[in-house]
Structures are given as C-alpha cells and as structure tokens.
Amino acid sequence: MRPITTLARPFVAAPYIITGLETLRDPRTRAEQVAPAVKPIADRIDWLPTKDPETLVRVQGALSLGTGALLLTGKFRRLTALLMAVQVVPTLATEHRYWTEDDPERRASERSHLLKNAGLFGALMMVAAEPRKSPRTAELRRQLHDARVQAAAEGKALRREAAAELRNARREAARQTRTARRGGRGAAKAAQAVRSVRKARRGRGGNPVAKLVRR
Image 1 (cartoon, rainbow, N blue to C red):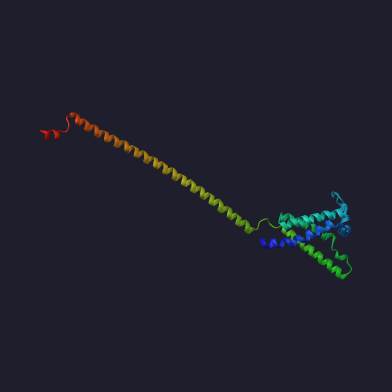
Image 2 (tube, rainbow, N blue to C red; image 1 turned 90 degrees about the horizontal axis):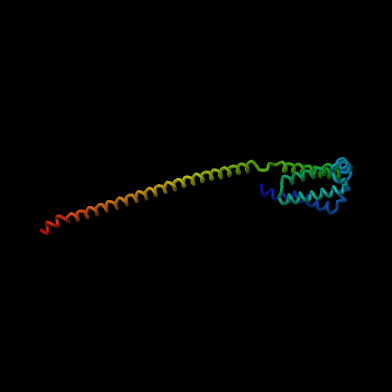
C-alpha cells in the first residue's frame, strides 16, 4: 500500500494547493461568492477575530495551501486529512447550492460538484480515522520485538554460561598448578634424602664392597 499512497498524495494535494494559491492571490472573487452564506454565520460566532469575508477567505486559502503541502510531503497524515475535511465543510454549506438554480444544466453541474465534495469529505474522514498501524503491521512488529527479547535473553544466558565455564577452567588450572608444585617439592625432598644417606654411608667407612676388593 505504500507505493499507492505515495502516488495518490499529489492528486489529493494538488486541488488544495492550487485553490490556496488562487485564493491568496485574489480573495475578492471567492469572498463575493461565499459572502451571502458566510456573513450571517460569522456574525453569530463571537470568538472570531474578524467578520470580514475577504479576510476569512484569505485564512482559508492559507490553511488550504499549508495542508496541501503537508499532505504532499507525507507529514502528519492523519492531522492533515482531518484539517482538509474541516475545510470542505464550509464549501458544502456555502457553495454549489444547486436547489437555488433554475437552469437545468447549471443545476446538474452544481449538484455534481456538491456530490464530489461530499465524497472527498467522506474519504478524508476515513483517512483521519484510520488506525495508526494496520493489524498485520502491528503483529509483525510484535513478533519482531518478541524475537529480539528472546535473542537477548539467550545471548545473556550464553554469556553467563561461558563465564561460569571460564571460572571453572581457571580453578582447575590453579588446582593443577598447585598439585604440580607439591609434586616438585616432594621429589626435591626425596632426592635430598638420598644424597644424605649416601653421604652418611661414605662417612662411616665408605663402600664395603670396595674394601673387600682391595683386600
């Protein structure tokens, strides 16, 4: 779905960007068109900083340009779709009032534009209400997280086992070293004892066999 979404973004953003630029360049035409419907509504809203239809149209044009640019870049997708849907509401309420037209062709044209804007409003609301992550993507992310946690636990256990084996090997090497040292000391004591015996025998009169041979 990612390539399709990337391809569809410019088509949705283009009307908002173009309308915003045209409205900021020449707001008078659009202000005259929507003034009969906007003026009574604006007079009832006390928190609006201005009641001038032309200024309100300029604000709407700037908002349209900004949301179109955000959608084109793919930033804040859900918030951008919600703001775009909000911008369609005044259009649905003030423009394309086909029931006031007497000409059948113009009446059909205005009704067609109204239905298109209504469809766009519904599509934008669907995008704004779409879950942040699809269930399949969430499941894959969860499985990846579990695999990472398991791999980390196994690696920790292997490191702990290797450290224990290393300690045991060091202890065994130290034990064998101590045993070898003790064996060396015993051999040295035995050799010293043999030398002492031989010296004692020589001190008593030498070798008896040698004395018999000399006689």
